[in-house]
Image 1 (cartoon, rainbow over the protein chains, first blue to last red):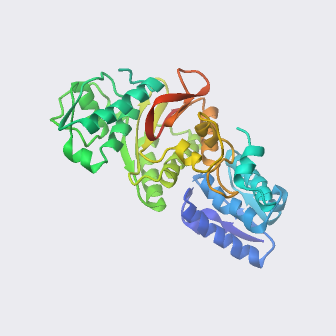
Image 2: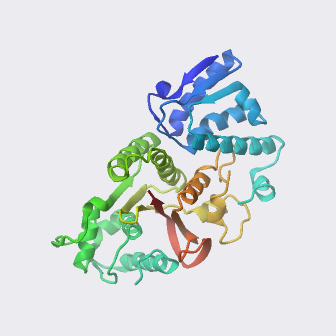
Image 3: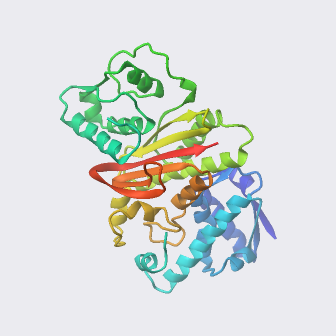
Length: 119
Length: 265
């Protein structure tokens, strides 16, 4: 299985901007076009933002039309994240799957917020 | 004039803007005895208006306030800075202004946190430091991306070492959160806009992978037992008069978005 060492690939331990996330996302797609799965290794990272998670993992959910986190983790094994950041990643994944499922059923975003999301 | 951050003090600083606009030449900043970082960032953004900066001489009457504004980094002050040494400059998180591309802002933000915040925080709080970086970056990036302002964002704050917390104020002179959401036609009630923006997955962008930034920030502050306030357009959301989160409707319109945080360490 191919492994992307994220910090090494981006040459940066702060995983914040969507610009960097887009570079990683393209690399992930490249690997997944040639193989069924990959390992995303976050070892040695310093910090990670929600926009970075959205532009990598969230974007992959949309691209591959994944409808469960199990399906995501079957093709992308994630290692090296702290417990807190892994929790945030799972929340990000759940959010993207939930909204993507409804959007792909033809619902618009206003209806999704009105009918399903509370705060 | 009360300059703790309350709906009344926010209404007071909007009055400063009206006074400055109507002012002919010299503005004597005379109504206050105590200034907090949220006032500094508000003034800084006001004076990023070239016409105002060129035509108005901003002169604090109280020498302590003049000294404080000078020390914290205000460049719009008029007159010589008085000699006054009551303030410990090491505990100030000095005024910063961020604008530019996402990559430039990331570099500026990381440098600022390393120099101005990490230098005071206890060394062993590594996990907290990671969270501080991602959450502060989220506020700055959100502001630059969504505010539709060309004036960037102004930030400053203060450490309170005996109480083991620091406060930060962020202000942009942009469209404001309620106005931005109103444009999305979500049909929310007045007073619900800011609270809505902090919900899980809530975003004005019409895509699935968005809307987690402010939700994570709110969670971070709750876990930290900290404190936050978001003031934008007609809404004042967050901890008001030390109570739980609530929204107050302001009597006067507040331009842009002010975020005030207290983070324990």
